[in-house]
Every structure is written in C-alpha cells, then in structure tokens.
Length: 332
Ligand code: ACO
Image 1 (spheres, rainbow, N blue to C red):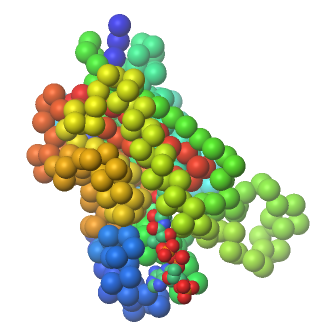
Image 2: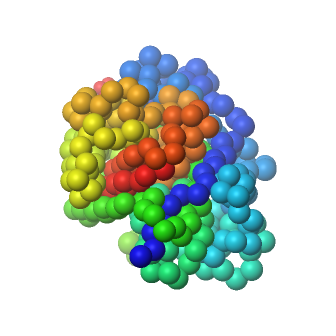
C-alpha cells in the first residue's frame, strides 16, 4: 500500500506590509474596528511591477523542495489552488511549470477558494496512492490586493484580504502521512460569497468590453453574517469527521491549522472544541486572509517556529466560497 506524506513546505510573502493605519488613509475605517471584527493588524500586498502569482509560487516551491531534499526535476505533477490566477485562462499551474523550467509535466488548477488547498492536497494524495506520481507540488496562492475595492464602498472585504503563496511537496511513502481528507460543498450558498465577472452567466452584449458599464461584478460580494454562521458549524463538523474516521479525539490533535478566515471564527472553533492555545495556529493577525494560500503559509510558518515536530498529529480545516469546506488529518 502506498501513502503520501508532506516532505517539505515553503512560503513566500510579498515585501509590502500594509497596516490598518495605512488603510485608514484611503478608506473610511479604523484600526479598532478591523482588529475587533477580524483580528487583522497587517497584511501583505504585492508590487505589481515585480510580483506575479507564478513567480511568488516558484519562490515558495523552491523553499519547499529544498526542505524536502529534492531537485526541481524530481517533481512529476503540479496542483495549483487559486481563485486569483495571473490570467483568466490558462491557469497558474502551467505558468509555475514554465517558471520552474519543468518540461511538459501535467499541471492542474483548483478553484475552490478558501478550501482550495485541502482540495488540492486531496487530489494529489489520490495520485500518489494510485502510484501514478511520486512527487507532487501542491500550491495555494493568491494575489487579492489588485482586485480589492479600496474605497469606502468595499470596506467590508477590502480590510480582510492579503497576498501570498504557500507550497507543499507531497511524496510517496510506505507509512501514512496523510490519513484522510474530507471534502464538501453546498452550492445553494454560491452567491453569498462570490465574484460574478468575468463569468459566462451574462448575455454576450453585456460581456463585450465596451459594453461593461457596471463593474461591481468584478468585486468580491460577501454576506459576512451568513459566512460566519455557516463557517463555525461546518468547521466543527468537518474536523469531527476527520477525528472520527481515524479513531482520534480533539485531545489527540497537536496542532489545528484552520483556514485563516477571521480570528473570531478560529477562536470560536477553538472554544467549541475545547482546544488549548498550544493546539491552534493563527497568523491572520500578520498576513490577513490569503484564501487558498492561508493554510500552506500557516503550516510553513508553524514549522519555521518549531510548532510542529516529527510524529505530530496535524489537522487542517477550511471553509469558504461555494460554500465549500474540507479537512485533512496528517502525521508529520
Ligand atoms: N470599517 C469600519 N466600518 C465598517 C467596515 C470597515 N472596514 N466594514 C463595514 N463597516 C460598517 C458597515 O458599514 C456597517 O455600518 P452600519 O451599521 O452603519 O451600516 C457596520 O460596520 C456593520 O457592517 P457589517 O457588514 O454588518 O459588518 P459585520 O459586523 O458583519 O462585520 C465581518 C463584518 C467582520 C466581515 C463579519 O461579518 C464577519 O466576521 N464575517 C465572517 C466572514 C469572514 O470572516 N469572511 C472572511 C472572508 S471569507 C472566508 O475566508 C471564508
């Protein structure tokens, strides 16, 4: 029986640190409101002159490969989770393949927003278990800043999101690293957290560039209260599902790494599951909500900070647009 394990992690954050005070200068908001509602103090924004999703992903990937003790050429396949690809098409997977100079390996893009990294990990896990590939790069990356409505009209979402990329190398192994993944969705809530355009749902005349008068469809729409209510329920359910499948209890978790949606959501789950501060990793305070990138960035930082040791039981959990939600249980 083949299994997969994460052999290396890396992340890359753009240099520009944007504080709540910086946002106060352009939006009618304030540090106190943002910290109280979201826990966020700073986030990173790219420099559009030099940063692309593909080149940031290449930097994160090289760190992950280095930590895995592998060369770029050892990679057989790429799974790239993002909702902010460099182009509307093709996806960012092929751009990363080009950036890394990898010849003709397959590259797959996953568009499951905040749950994207766990979906990507699950897909890669199946390829490795089936024996099709030995080493897969699994990426979660986003550039949110260039699409944010940095005016008072967009303040309920503009203060939340940030940019960055996290990368994992998934490697074939004789013992289980990834024990299970659980993936869910409920499309009844698709329009509660979404960006409509440039989707194909509009008639042709409304999709022609010269006809686009209303650009609001290009901005994030979020029903914040609805997201909060569903997130706290689904996070708890899907973590419970991971534990039950593997005969484990909340006490057994050495580190829970939740998608960094909002510090209040993470704290709610921690309390409901009776987890100690040592058992939960949060970095949203410093990097904001980076959607598909949030879990792999957090994992990579947790490793750098010595919060994960060999043999630890790690639980990843996510909730986001779709709605989608997912978990993974991993022995490090
Ligand atoms: N600064 C100051 N005031 C603001 C801001 C801001 N940035 N944004 C909204 N407000 C104002 C609103 O205009 C409104 O004012 P009004 O009462 O005079 O009309 C008031 O604050 C309340 O607005 P709401 O939109 O109802 O804000 P809410 O209290 O719901 O807080 C928040 C918004 C923090 C997003 C909350 O709904 C929440 O925690 N939602 C969870 C969803 C979440 O965290 N999403 C993250 C991204 S999605 C994901 O990753 C899964």
